[in-house]
Image 1 (cartoon, helix red, strand yellow):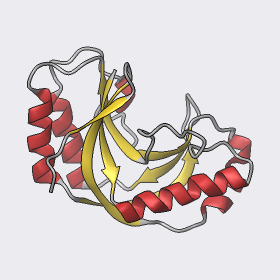
Image 2 (image 1 turned 60 degrees about the vertical axis):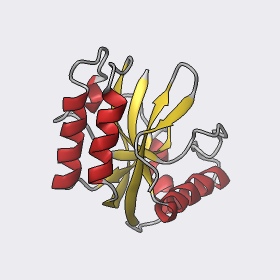
Image 3 (image 1 turned 90 degrees about the vertical axis):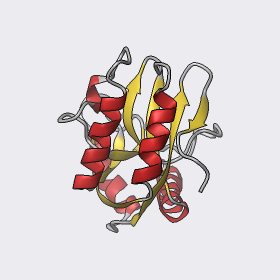
Length: 172
């Protein structure tokens, strides 16, 4: 599987990681426990089985124009289905347009994950992968009521087969 992800600017990244750490200190599920070097706060735009030829270049061209993109985080919720604890990302016309453009670039790819599809996708940053709805009130208190702002300042692809990342933006 290959993903297309936006990564957070350093300040926003630090704020999300601080919540991961506070969740851990409170004994709640969290992503701070995942110490793999590829683990960092990110917004997944799409996931497919593999990239067709030329897709990485086309995505890089798209992201080089669109980024950095301002972002504001919203409330902390538990998503239905796989039950991740997430910090919702406020959707903007620019983010929605970028998401649709990524899907256009990936039109010929196999194995699109339907939960990322335009019209279904819920933009978010993950805080914990498995979370009980009963602990949501405590998680919200631990996360605090702030609505952090920052930027998505780069894009990458995660390769689930070999657990590596590939930048999808040029060095600025």
